[in-house]
Image (cartoon, rainbow, N blue to C red; front, side, top):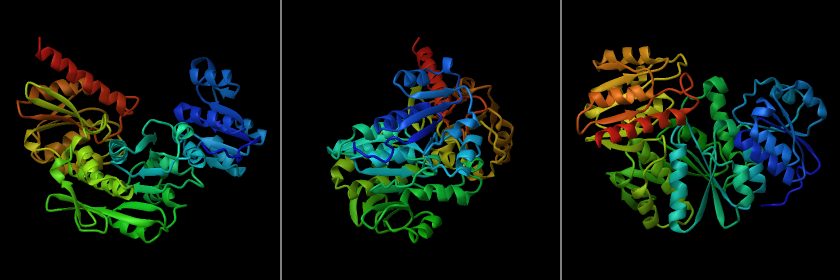
Amino acid sequence: MKTISNFENKKVLVLGLARSGQAAARLLAKLGAIVTVNDGKPFEENPSAQTLLEEGIKVVCGSHPLELLDEDFALMVKNPGIPYSNPMVQKASERKIPILTEVELAGLVSDAPIVGITGSNGKTTTTTMIAEVFNHSGQSGLLAGNIGFPASEVAVDASENDTLIMELSSFQLMGVDAFRPHIAVITNLEPTHLDYHGTFEDYVAAKWNIQNNMTASDFLVLNFNQGIAHQLAEKTKATVVPFSTIEEVDGAYFKDGQLFYKGELIMAADEVGVPGEHNIENALATIAVAKLSGISNQAIKETLSAFGGVKHRLQDAGSVNGVSFFNDSKSTNILATQKALSGFDNKHLILIAGGLDRGNPFDELLPHIKNLKAMVVLGETADKLAETAKTVNIPVEYAKDVADATRKSYGLAEAGDTVLLSPANASWDMYKNFEVRGDEFLRTVSSLKGAAHE
């Protein structure tokens, strides 16, 4: 960890705990800051705040009192999930208090170079692929960021012989200033999280912060399947390395069933260990990063061939009496489900979908759900999805929750069929998060396996 004096004897407010808030508070204290943590959860129900208090860090819990900002803070480190419309954040902004997220701290103290991955879909899979390629090749790739390992916590223990493989959300990237990855990847850009950002333009601007401080000695890996990536490529100082499944580019590309990097054959596309066209894009982005990092073709091929996916992202949950189950609970928008469907034969596929109603129709799904064997729908959007399915004559059943949907899907299936949980919706109408939703699917599949062996 680099020893920096940026925060020494400065008053810093950490707004919101969770794991990233805890990591930020501890790092700031280690760097000599005078830290106050403010979290909405009551102290007596807040073990994280209790632990920080025991470590000598001031905590204010149970509410977000605006008068707290009268204490002349030099900086606010905000949990990325807290919107900028929050009164505390607005007041800090009015007082011109800099508002950062903890990934900025990680970038400031990290001795390790950073590979930063962002995008609307595929970033968790791509981040995991890249880390596995690094580690299989003998290089040390440390997962960090939005993937569940607070970046500022990982950075503290990382050395110059490691590389931080960091998944970055738009929420995190809105709060960076000096952050500079050596390699950055933008997997794709689609209109998501507009309830947070307001407009697609503002969402893209947040993602684009990843390259703000990059220079020609750094590399920006962009998806040239998208017109917007061609436009953005003209607006960066970084060296652009494209990837594409539809054209030969001066980077990583798909051609005649093979994956290439700058004319060099890496592997056959059908050797990638996870299904779907979107995973070919993820593999190409991974190949670009790996080649830029001096990793051998053999290590790339071996890793991508053995890659089994990420939990809740097209996760193979096994089979029961010849019926296969895939957990894609992380598909919380239409685009992600479209991409998931590309990896299966619809005639032998039963899709479980539905969740939080954000007001959007599902017409975009129509070309991708044609010829499905059946759909099982649930949640706030069940009726909308049922109507969409019926326009293309797909049989529909309703379910009360994911467990019920899984059992009903299994009842509709025959040996050789697949049941896919890919909701195309966020989970918050019924579940705390997509992980809880996916875990219920996995538990139900396990119970079906148990019953089949009785």
